Image (cartoon, rainbow, N blue to C red; front, side, top):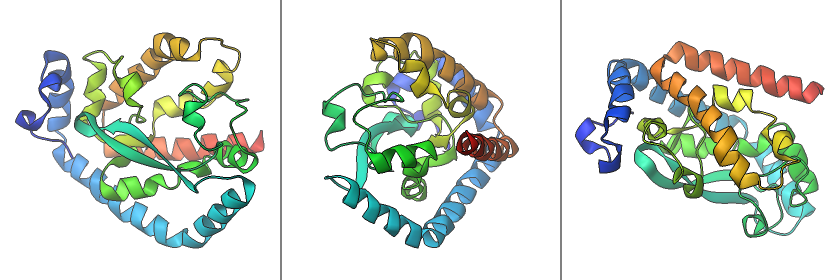
Length: 231
């Protein structure tokens, strides 16, 4: 899962990233277990959820015009761009009708989309990305190239591993949409205030990485989602 140092992109070969690389390089066996877990669990989940996924796809088509899946370019391991899969929760071409960040009361969100987003069901298709090796269950959430261009050298260390479906930063900022709902310049506030704080959690995750910690974050995510359901 961790590339050899000489295989990293030139822009990632700096002292800031080398610090985190050396930490992870000592845990290659744990990283192998992480990848094995990702592949087996994601594959089994896709098989088990095939019927519910078909039902959701039908509901999305009945609710509004557009495709069932939404595929957006994001950035993952070694700063490689890939297409992240999600159930479409917004009107067609929503990314051309507003900010790249979605706020809580965004008028672009469809009726069924609001439900899917509330319980994070729209993220399920990312199991496909995990099987393909483009993502992992736990890791820094993948950003669009626009925001990645704002990363510091240290922030780029998050690209040593595949992008994740969930992370401690995702849990801490699960109400991010509400935070940005009353902001006028959403992109500016996100880049200047929220992104640095989220990246601090992501970098700490890399520094103290362990497979056991991954399991704890996955459990914490389930608890966070469950609590949101109760709300």
